[in-house]
Length: 355
Image (cartoon, rainbow, N blue to C red; front, side, top):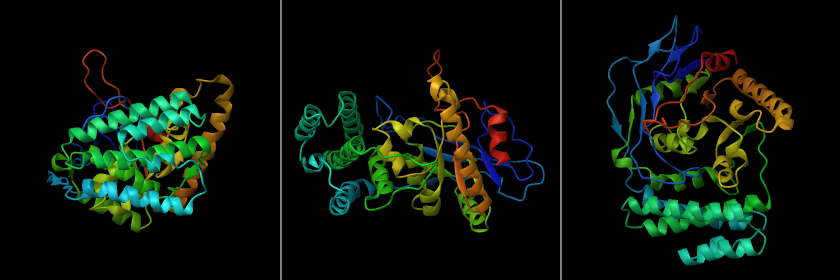
């Protein structure tokens, strides 16, 4: 098994596994839904730097300085609305009936009115309705800020589908298994998530560094090896960001990475539709293990099941798993406002190698 880990100043040296490689993985900071209260369009970087090889490692990467490769986005923003509409049409024909009013709205006024009416009808809890309105306003502002001439169309198309999915989960809550496989039909949640996040990325100023390393990863996976990416975690949109930056050059990695996901993105109605479209190992974060004392033992048992599922996957080989061992997202320094990778302790990484 090959473990690729972040190498920031907050991380320890790699644990002494004979096949461990330390690779730098970083993203510039960006605020994205569904957890952010304020969204902003920013360039992104996915940077694998020169590797620091541990003892006797058979995974050989070039240590020469990487050439940054621009990721162009010529048609994606324009196609987002069309793809979302196509997905919603397909979903109409194949899924069990539920309230479909969001898919019929044609303006911002109708959308906000629909949220109000569904709340008054008792179909939406007030807190979820308030979250829907805030999500819409933040998303609208961010996409319009991009300067895309079709911003209004993209916002309405993506948000009507997103709100439809949120309402569906309120009416019929989805329950995640320990190992969740992305739901691609009858409604394609993966494409839905990609189309939603795509307009929020400044592709013209974003890049993937050391792109050849991803080719090496794919080759190792084809040979039956497992690869574990150990990284800091910045937003709940990280999986979509990774996939969007790699979808043209490394579509297999973009679609088949398994992400270790905490309980918030598996329980929050505003987050769940995006999580349903990802391959996940579902866990309870150590940071919130004791939030509700009477549920602590249940959470521990659930985590044990998830670890067993992960072990079975790794024994089968050819698995690519992304882990944020700090157990949470990066936070700004309260005194300076600067963003730094969350602290990771050696035992967090060693546990990954034990699997």
